[in-house]
Image (cartoon, rainbow, N blue to C red; front, top):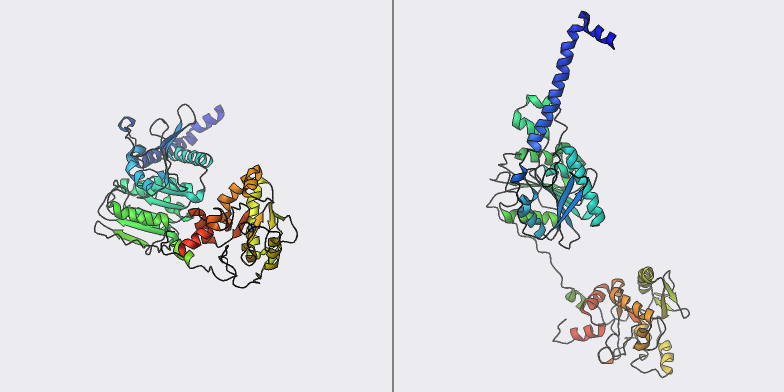
Length: 508
Ligand SMILES: [Zn+2]
């Protein structure tokens, strides 16, 4: 070592020392300057004392994770009882509570909102930089995934100013449903050109930092950029550069005239809200680029034609024998006395069993029954047991021969079983007996809540006066989808419905 030093200090090498020292010194200056520029432009220092807490105009849950004594991650969660959630990444300036007005607007769209506090506010004493922010966002995300069980396809990111970098950086590794960037910066390089002129940053290696122009190329979600033309902090052109690099098909731009950086969603509230609403609900606009000011009229929101489900159901065919909604009851028969459905299939399936012998059903009813059986099985671990399916005119006549009363066994030609759509489940004789059996009772309660999802309906639920037959918790009939849903929602039987729509004072 000594030898080496001596060698260096030899006159021969002395001329090398000064330049070497100069290079190392310059390099250090560059590194420090780059960090300084980053801090001053991206994470300026704000006095925590000034960051007073404002009260929120909404209820929220404050979530706080301590990573160590000094390190806390905190965010707020507004539970709107929605499946959809917005991640809100604020700008750099202030505590989260300065953004409550924006958050309120997002909340009013019916979404849950999660908003992250950045590392340097509130309790955290960590310094703001890229690494800390990235780390915190990942922890925030995995906590939310676990605790709130939110799926990526239900997450929309709303990011403001520097939040745009956090959002795009995040979406490189996690694909979310949609992204909204408000006044996004293109990169630290361009930010520093704007502040300090052009020469400096070439030598400060700034171009790779906060490079949204590059990150946007990886975006897989629909994008809406909102930017103001008079933004003094992050000029409009930066937002446009990002937009130009974004996937063409799924990206939109909204330029708002005559406003600066800090009014966010507050100015031209109604117009801005309209754009957000369309984007959140459909994300597609007619044009790619919009430029609006205070005189812009809000486009008429296209009213989707809501078809009244009742009007649709009323048009179903209740008359033809083969119709899924053929109405038969104690006084209404099939048209043809010997009507036989043409897709009768033997009752067999993975989750149903025929406990008599060689029972038949119409194919569509059988498929639906097995599907229902599958879900039934995962709940009760037993197969649905079918006692009776299709019954022909002759078969029904044999049943009647045993002197079964009309209110329990229908007359031949009048039975729903002749449609090949009706089934009787589990072997019992009366409603009382059926419901007094603990398992059968729980099966019935499950069917009552779920059968309509497979288009089944409990035909006789009100007794003789209304439905023409005694209550039959075992008798289920496959019916058309909308009608099954309607009857379930209104808690009425097919008979009640049919009679109502066939009288003038129809209320349903
Ligand atoms: Zn029956």
